[in-house]
Image (tube, rainbow, N blue to C red; front, side):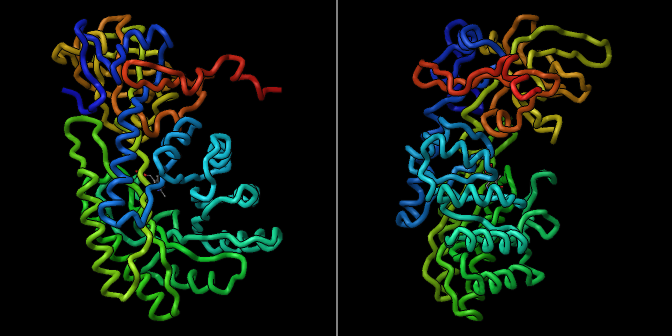
Length: 432
Ligand SMILES: *Cc1c(COP(=O)(O)O)cnc(C)c1O
């Protein structure tokens, strides 16, 4: 019935998640409310880990891209499920440290790591720096020298693969702020340079071709291009790089129009290509990393809102106003992202009313979805927006001084708070 496995409808016609009645969750914890289903998250993690066993003989590891939802509980779950972690800032490193995450399994990304962040990452013995550019390489080597340390590094490479997705979240081609271009020879020069530095050790190459991708082909092509590059490095420089990171980007279902590829199929096809190319270049099959983010938590999450008003503008549209908006889910305002909206009070009813769901911020563009079909909405109803586990809380803001919502984790009919709702006091705590 729903795109998300963790959702169902109970006898009263209410939407449920992880066995919990969403109306009861809204009443107990207030709205807006982020809700995550733990079983879905853990099952997804296990599917990734198991497919590494199946297709790479365990010679690889999924890294959870924590930018999609960074909080202590997610770090703990990723660790319990044997995933490593990607971080992109000092704040995400700090979150992992606070959660007791094993830092040797953490990879540090980003196109402008500051000197302070680099020092902090070295102090907590982070596993790997994914170096984005030559300034960073030089800076990292210099700071390592100061600290008398050696950093394990990876290079972020632009393989030039065009994955068909929204422009704003496309990162594989030459025109990207991320990484070294292959075609121009920039990446090869960077490898040569790294070999001359004493305090960095080049262990891995990395690529990430985009996000919300539904085809397997671009992933296969990117893997082949990366292995060809590893072959060139071996042939021309006599150096074998033994680890390859193929990034994230696996698409999920936001609406029934989305058709994600089963992860198994992706893992299998890519592993076949990796092994064939390794053999062709006479290279050992590299240790493989992938970096799923959205696909780990996206479909596991929903957001609950209370409808506070309704404006029917004849011959134009009907606005339904909710008690959250772009402050807790900016993705429609940012990239016109599609979402499924469900009237949680009437989840057993056919959607029969076309509405525009509007947030409460002082911005006309503060919309969650336009012209979407839901079961007739009345003031006081609880609306659920589905597949909000990724890039919602992590992109939330305090615009209009709206406190960020709480997040609860549900499992087998039980709910627990994993992130507290912000208070007004929290909002002014740094004001002088
Ligand atoms: C954003 C990002 C990811 C995660 O992408 P998803 O589409 O959420 O899976 C992985 N790796 C890198 C380098 C990223 O920037």
